[in-house]
Length: 65
Image (cartoon, one colour):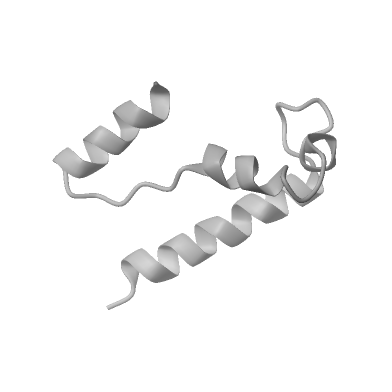
């Protein structure tokens, strides 16, 4: 429900939204959830790297002229 609200706000204000949960949902298809976040909540080094790469790519796509 949370991401649906955020995506709705993004549409309303014409702002792009990056769904980090979707990024992790895809990542766990390749490697177990524990490899991204040992307690399955707080990202470890690999989880932070995954977030950073997707944020970087998202910013390049949405902020470049």
